[in-house]
Length: 326
Image (cartoon, rainbow, N blue to C red; front, side):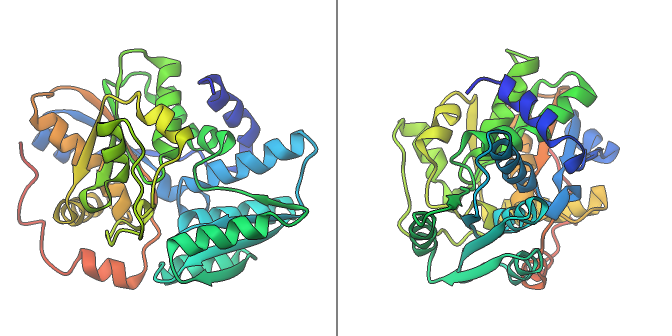
């Protein structure tokens, strides 16, 4: 897929989605001696970037006159809501398989958008059930990342940021299955051949980082127990690995760092973020500390859907007494 597919996705999505804001913290810029621009996808439909990929896929199917009778998906949360929302926009039935232990808020929201929700015992079982259901006639499996239209749609977040700010030296985004970072890479290449693109992943959910390091896809048997639920995928796909392999680097982020930056993002930007959003700034902090000061950096904040349990874990201990520093 060529970078122009992201531009096509933006034209297709048009007024259906929100052009999300770019947030800045002058205090954080002073702490870290750089300019950081946060693309806040918490302000997107369903509260996450996933709405872009899901709706782009269905709209493209409509263009090709291939609208299915039913959309089927598997997800631990944000993709579930996105598919349910996008299907409702198109007047299509949606069935979403969600693994047990997923955010109760995200499950409730998925049901509220009109989808039938099936709870599976595990992430692996969720994928199996969804694939089996999609094999029925008239059903279409809308994967969370392993589809060109999903990747192109998710890349429109970075595309908007480049259109608004014109120049970045480096771009950082979280990585679960790799759809967002793949789309971000493609969007960046529309504007710059030299801007570095980095992925960030929880250290205890580092299947993509391992794949990047070894050149061979690594896959977990069971969903990792990271607080960053958007990164609890079992493994990336061949499709997303194609783009991940072209990145400038990969950063593995500890659970303590995720909690630290979740607190600081909410404190400095005055918005809600879910833990997966903290991965990008944690990686950017490491990159800046390696000697990359006085740069212009884009960080994608992936979403803002928090349940009370996760919120409590984030704020269980004070991290704000330790100032961000290099």
